[in-house]
Length: 214
Image 1 (spheres, rainbow, N blue to C red):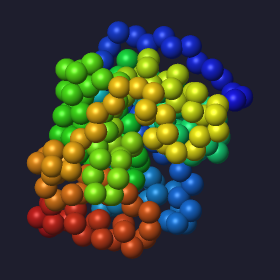
Image 2 (cartoon, rainbow, N blue to C red):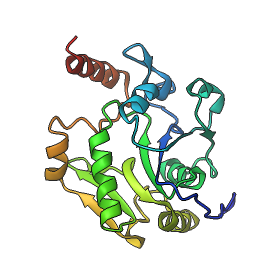
Image 3 (cartoon, rainbow, N blue to C red):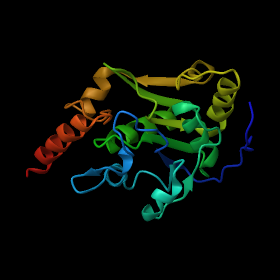
Image 4 (tube, rainbow, N blue to C red):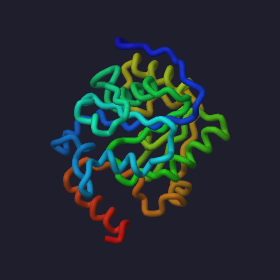
């Protein structure tokens, strides 16, 4: 595997939040993180919903010039064209705190409560990763990770040519949230909704307006 091989040297804080905005948005036809959602870029809504979760917030993007308005640290992929697994690797490499929450930029209903629950489990049980596993499968981009143990496992998976973002998880101590646990926190089943099409955007905006009572 080519590319930078960052040395693990995290400062003694607690949690970083990485928003992954490196996808190509092919089905959307434009950068979905910047597409207006209720009148402002979708990524701003994601950040607002998770406000207060982390001591450090970064964005991984291969178009940093488009995201300077956020006023946040911006990091390109260390290994371009390696998909979400490469994005996760780049995020864990970039953050400065020992634990990291990862969220996709296109989740307008990302759940602060689920992240807090995941973080509590990770710390209390000394785990390396906590991921939701709902009816649509595992959700690696609404999950928390221990950087020191996850980084080398992800690096090895990439070096072996793996492409699946969850391919490396058997190498670390991981716990999955059950559908029942998730439903208790997110009874409307909205937290992991990815917006990949213009039609999904319209539907999600309608749902968000209902939430706001407007």
